[in-house]
Amino acid sequence: MAKETNIEKLCDRELLEKILSIVERQEKLPPPAHESGHRLYDNKSLMEMLNIKDKYLKKLRDNGYLGYSREGDKYWYTQEDVDRFLRRFHYEAFAIGDELPKQEGGGYV
Image 1 (cartoon, rainbow, N blue to C red):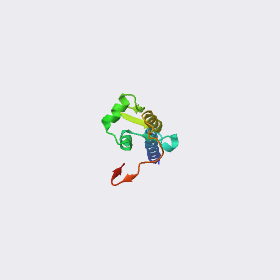
Image 2: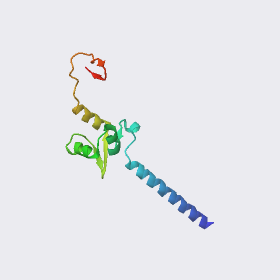
Image 3: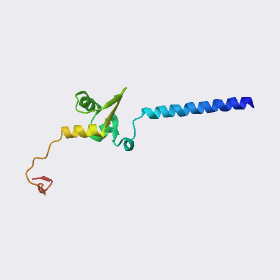
Image 4: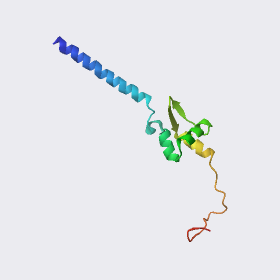
């Protein structure tokens, strides 16, 4: 019966170590958008959303146009970073009047 107790203790210890490793991995992950109140993007998701290539995204980061957070080789962008970038390079419409040109044939006049 003493052996069963040692085996049970070993199993409990192994289980606790597994749980601890899972918790440690979860702590390293960025919080989900609904918890932080902000959406987070990695390189891939931001490139898809903005329809840009990795070299252009790197250029935006390197030139200081787009804010980011970095851990190792992983980059994270908040919705605030993206919004700030878009506002900085936003141009207002300059057409006079509220009416759009009427469409005739296949194009605008």
